[in-house]
Image 1 (cartoon, helix red, strand yellow):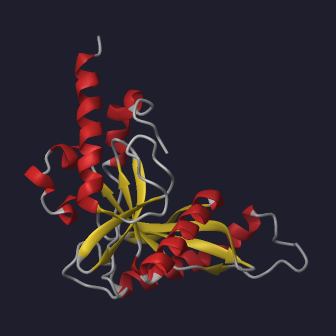
Image 2: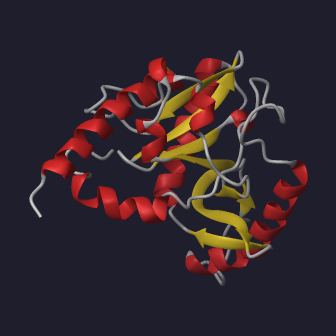
Amino acid sequence: MTKNGAILPALAVGLLFLEMLPMARPADKDGKKSAALPGVLDEAALMKMKETAQRTLPKVRQSLHQEEAPGAGALSLGQPLPSTWVGLNDLLNQAPGGGEPVSLLHGSGESVRFPVIQNDSVVSSISCGKWHGEWKTTAYGDSAYTKLLTTVRKNNADAEGVPVTAYFTVTVTAPRRDYLAFYKDNKLFMVPIMDDPVTGFKAAQSIPAGEVFSQLRKIAEEQADQLKAAPG
């Protein structure tokens, strides 16, 4: 987890790239798709992404140096994690009292991460998205982070009684934080991936999104003031 002061030098630079991150959409409390909520990934798009990810599995096996390994288990795709993001300006311009947290989410609904499973373990991941009108694999690998995501997702899902299909990711671009998120009783909850010593949030705990964004806004305002006061 990035600490409060550590992000300051990269704050302005990171925004140009991170503000372009794509988004997919969350599911409702029963894991079903709901057009009333932002970020719902339609089934046709999900099928295209899955087909794209399936075509990438041989490259993943090669990256694991298993293309000729005898007895290597089959690779399969786990439950996907759609991606969303929240920008610095969204935090700074929130309505008094936090407003409606869902309104801060952005994206195109065209990006998702698939865990790659082998022998019941996460060994890699495949990220897919739409690029110039075509579905493409945008990245693969990153097994440690994906394993962390899926572990936190399962632990939180078990605790909340929410299906794993209800979860998606939220990247806050500045101050940089990554969360899982889900809907329950028509409310948005966010789940830290790791303990955050700055906010005091603990990994795998469910926190109302408004509370998260309120805390991050305070950090963002402090960092913005520091940037303004910095010489040169």
